[in-house]
Length: 293
Ligand code: AMP
Image 1 (cartoon, rainbow, N blue to C red):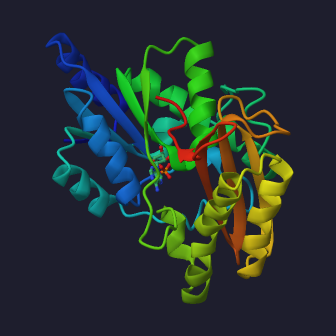
Image 2: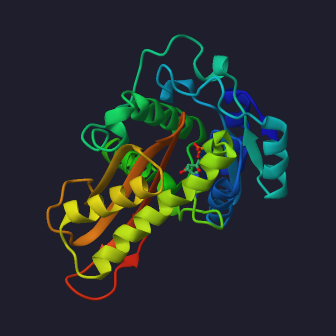
């Protein structure tokens, strides 16, 4: 069923809860693709009632970002949710989510500062506020997020921990196109030529991983390798290429333990992010890993 009102959704969910059902939840901004599909399929395995929200959250877009032109495809999205056996699709309007100019916010300090925090001020505050609202509306047992947005997942985990939301977070691995490009709603913005270049984003991360496999443990050397790969493939607008500790995004000099290698670049007007999470020991293979489980 498709529901647009908070009151109606709460009514339906309270009936399910009274019947002893658990609720699993996937928040999305729609324009659904295989990354969302993966999150939805995982959620389906972890609860009785599967709920997907589709809402393009204005609060997480900065001025001059792509809020107006963000792809919207509500009818097709609802149909896909139905095919994926979703029980409930929540499709609120702006006036339902933000009936007055928003004046109450949820913020996470620290983790929101590095990486995307530097180029998108206010973005994570918009994310944590809408996710907190959705968690309060849905009260899910389980919520699934994608590792593609690794910093977002860490920020939400911190919010859940520090504000005692009674929800279990589960991650989906990053779903990629055949050439390695992480699937994203924003890939639609790319011209043919830009789409060709975009494969270098994931390749650059793999180049960094290969350097670690040769025994390199200097974080700067690894990120320089990533940057060089991007530049050599015609991607010259690099917002960041960083290698950080995967649990708290702290800086590392020597690479050790579970780390995240993350990049943000722009191709024309389109901003793309990607990351790989790696477990690095003093010797031996460098394996890809989940950020948390
Ligand atoms: P969005 O609609 O972009 O807000 O994304 C909704 C959820 O899908 C978030 O938890 C994302 O991290 C996740 N997601 C987006 N792209 C991918 C992908 N390529 N692989 C896995 N999860 C993804």
